[in-house]
Image (tube, rainbow, N blue to C red; front, side):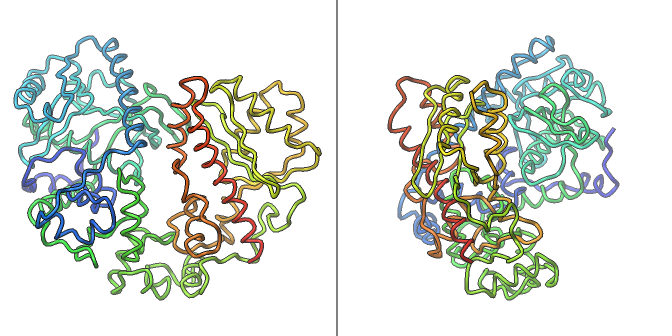
Length: 562
């Protein structure tokens, strides 16, 4: 049985802080991802940088109505995928555990229902069902609430996949379904990383609420996640019912939860004291390492540029920003050396940070970096980007100095994929060696595996003529990385856009309505739902694919001249 440490027990038994208004389990995700600014955005709904800078005039003084930001296409897609996955799992569990009750909290109004809360509490205290689905839990002590997908007795958790974890067979535990991949350790405990911090606090709210509803004063505090996939250090990839991920709560988690409640109380009572230019609270600085931006990615990036946010810099996260703040530095342009950010000045990263800060150029190409022989120009260079959907390659873009080829599968299936692969290998009319430049591991892996598994004539011979160059690995080469200022990470668009902003390469993505890989997946799935293919979608996907290929070509030409 997971027992809290003495320090943790003390923190549980201290009087819990209470939210000034009832808060849902999902309300605390932004704080746990170290990006509480997004909670402010949820309040003021900015549609542009100007909406943030004119915050008081527009939102506190109520001179103009709030801007309503509609959920974007990718957010809706992810949410819908999650709902479909959850529904399938729930239907299977109903058959697996017949002794269950469906409370049926499905809407925001349901979550406010005293009746549904009373029904859930009665079921928990009565202890009759083995499983309660979509019940409403509330913690009167701190005024938080939530709707766990599953509340299951410890006795039936092994049927859901629980391994190597002691639980009380008569107690109820929260289990949530996530359509994502969860990394677990050898003991099937969810590992601690930034991506799951939102899940952790959500499960904490559920676990504490269940204990509050049944007056459980024991020291045990745990919950579980049923994921689409798990990654285990010994067994590798595991499926939904192969195991349950145990969610543990440390002293740090409990302390941070109390601070999150304080933050939300401040947000409710002191919003009119917030200043943004410059920010007058540490919570008003954006965390550019957090990618869970809801619908605010664009306006958040604009704001970060405007205030010269430190976390825009590579290897600089919130912890480095805190060190900078302690040194009296709040803007990236004020950083004098790596030491200001807490890096050892003579460490490899420290040297690179100091060098790029002092350089008049936004790009540093170490002379010792020639991984995969990228410095030597070949006669037959292809810049290749593929697009996939539902397990098939449906588009291959090939850019050379002579122009661009956009190859599109007529159907989203194995036959359509074979068609586009045939077109791809037929482009090498000279049968010369090809130097294929790509970004990431997808192109080399997928093209090689699909061609080797196919019966396409000449597929094996084609592969023998190919030399691969992962340009992403060239930039991230650990012994001599290429350093780009003003980019958060090493994504192709991030690098290209940062250099385009400084006038070093053309801005290839500015005119693309399809702006990222997930959106291209959504457009593709919709496009292939009807025949003939929608020509507007074909054009937009081709333009996005071409921009990727051209951006790689631009970057290669640039770094070869540095």
